[in-house]
Length: 316
Image (cartoon, rainbow, N blue to C red; front, side, top):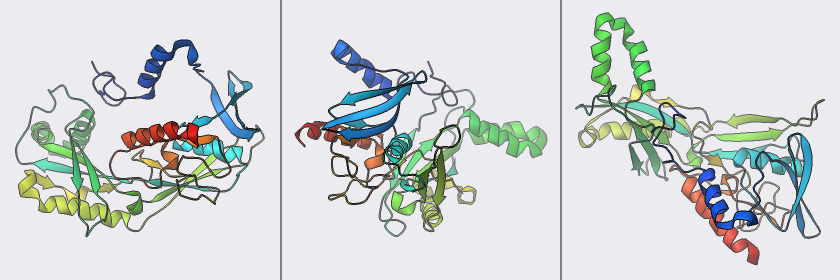
């Protein structure tokens, strides 16, 4: 059955999330693992060889003490925690992004019924485009077949054809794909996170902004046009005039607010074990410590890097 979290979703449990790993850890370690559901971390500090994490649960503040902390709250929450912990208000932290673009693709031949099939929201195919004249990095495509969202767009766009709209919509639904493209962070716009001073309610808010990269649109257009020239091999045509370059952050593949470097000296840097400047026992293990964001999906890379850091940290 479907999870139903986006459109009709995907087969239940097919996409990994942290709950899967947590349940396995609970099964293996039982009482040795203390899982605090609903506990929200706020700040981190190091004192006398210990790490103190202050947070709250149910509105009550509490401080936890540990010999070492692995911070993997997700790039934006992790960045916020470190900004507040260091008192870095009004000092923007840069996030690098794998910018997302998309365009429809029309196949010459139909495949399936479209409206009548039981399908999933998952991408049907991944394509890696290597085109040095466009980008020195590979460009990644996730290819999606028909879904209800595409059907709704077709119905609205083709309504002007009156009685012909329905058969025309069904004709296109059997042949239409969507190519979702991702660029390397070098070709993408950047995001900035700024933590504001606490307001009258004591709440410190994050302000998100972005800086456009002039190469982004050219790289996206170049990638789409390259696929257009491959129409014989691909069995269809990329509809380049319908190309859309989405806002920075739309891909959800971003990070690099504290990029790893060999010898960190600046505030917004970390070492090879994900330790931000000034920390010895706090390790970033999510995408916030990545020095670049590839065009391909980053989940497995983040998990592998986290495993590497956690394995090496006790000997550091």
